[in-house]
Amino acid sequence: MSRSMIQWLERQAAVRDRRGLVRRPLPRAADEQFIDLASNDYLGLAADPRVAEAAAAAASLWGAGATSSRLVGGTTRLHLDLEEELALLAGMEMALVFSSGYLANIGVITALGGPGTLIIADEHCHASMIDGFRLSRSRTESFTHNSVEDAGRLLAGRSEPRALIAVESLYSVLGDEAPLAALLALAEDHDAVLLIDEAHSLGVIGTGDFQGRGAVAGTFLAGHPNVVVTATLSKALGSQGGAVLGSALLREHLLNRARSFIFDTGLAPASAAAALAAVRIIRDEPWRAESVRSNAAALAAGLGPALAARGAVVEQTAADRAAVEQTAGAVQSIAMPSAASALAAAEAARTAGVRIGCFRPPSVPDGISRLRLTARATLTHEEIEDSCAVLRGILEELP
Image (cartoon, rainbow, N blue to C red):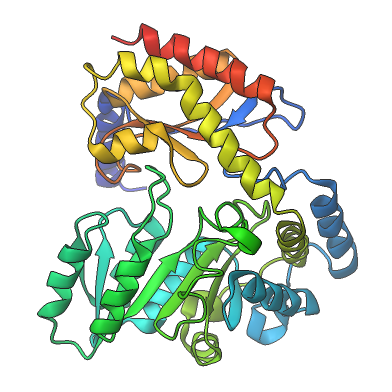
């Protein structure tokens, strides 16, 4: 490596260290005894025997990998079955499976983008969407988080013939909901596509007969010609991969234009089989979605006294307070005074046997370092009580 590059890397490392932003992977053991409030395994399906056995059977039959891109020889019957059942679960016409949710977002945004498409995006959109915007060559503008009025202002003056509104149904850090009904009305008024990332809502939210099917299924958004949905298979579904859901015309377009699909090796058959098993469990066991939400409420209630005591120390927006009190999904977000205090709190919790998320810039959309707690359907009452006791003690000792 060149001397100038080495010097630049050393300066970058020094800046990260000074700001408390150093990141390192923390390996976990298969038999670890932590209470898990950090993972995205919302329904506890990653270790479910039915999901694991489906993956093992597929690996035994098809081998460890897809062997090539989906358009060459990497498509199996498992991929097609998964796409069909995902579409049915979410209430969309068709689905196309990618190797990750990140690639699904990049694929659909770049395939629909270009100089003739204006993209307006919520300022809290995930990094995978932001990278898609950058690669799309579209003019991209961000609007104030969850502000339909600001989004409308950006659309009103557009010169491009096409437009795309990009949002998440449940946001990954604060855990708050997007105003999807109002955004769809805006999309209809301006002949725009509403792209909804369901990464943190699929498997978790939904009402009535649509428990766990996400924010779109069972509503007027499902199958709407102006709506496109993306999802990940690596969170509530406990597997790996991603998907774009929409019309048959969109699927055909992606097959021919989405570079992150065309030029990528297909999703491993074992991952497709695991996700397919998880889709069927979500369909057949709606209690899991109800349980994850009730456990999230229990976590919020258990931490309430400690958070109230810190209200004068940490300034929080109304959105922050709503996230702490209760969100629609699994995520609880706690604003912290600094990156260093967030890291210290997460490490103290880990030492006490509770794994929690520590989000610091640039992973937080508003620049405020946070602890993020994610509920799971399989948490026990005792685990919730124990973790709340640990976290209350840590939060109460913060300056």
